[in-house]
Each structure stands twice: as C-alpha cells, then as structure tokens.
Image 1 (cartoon, rainbow, N blue to C red):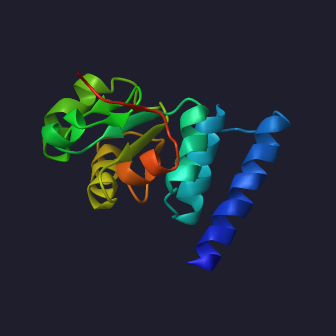
Image 2: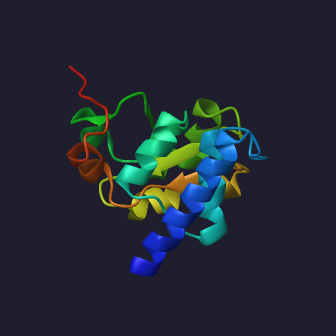
Length: 145
C-alpha cells in the first residue's frame, strides 16, 4: 500500500511539474493525471480524484438511482453501471474527455471504467473508496430535492 501511495505521489508530482512547465503531451491537467494513473495501474483515492476533478474531468456516478438521489459529486453524470452499454455513448459523446467513474466503494467504478475503455474512451480511471470518501474529504456534492 505504501509503495502504491509513493508511486502515485511521485507520478502526480511529476505530472504537475510537467503541466506547470507546459510540457504535458496529454492535453490538459486532467488528462495528464489520468495518464499517470494508467501508467502505474493505480486508481486515485478521493483526495487524488479531487485534483482530477479540479482539473476539469467529467465524473460519472455508476451507482443505482436510489444512491444517486441521496447525493452525488457536484456536476457528475449518472449512468448506473448496468446501463453503460446503452447509455454511455449518448451521455458521453466525446471519447477523449477525461473521465473518473465512482460508486459507493470502488468495485462498480472499476467495472464502469473498464466498460468505457472497451467502448473506446481513452482517458478513464475509477476512484478508489467511493462517494462516502469523497464526501468525507470535503469534495463538492449535490443532493437533489
């Protein structure tokens, strides 16, 4: 676990330095952070996902309708993981946009990210920990009325 955190932190630091220097080939800071994730086969936790969020990534909530209605990441798109095959291309027309999937704990987010990659999306990662960690870390949320 410590080695994963150290590797992620090193990759993130390098990416932020390259982005700050204008040397990133990934296009945007969010794409660069996702590329660092994919290169090390690491998934960002809620704090790391917040940096990707702040860099402009699209967040996709893969939880059930009931879970979504209880609250979600501010600005997220809702596509329950069981509906991905039919709904993803309609709700996510740009296959190059940086995307972070999330669920309650992480497994459905990983499944959703995998499905998106198979559908041709190029900049996708899945948040470790899930919505409760996001909320506990102070990430922006919306609760529908």
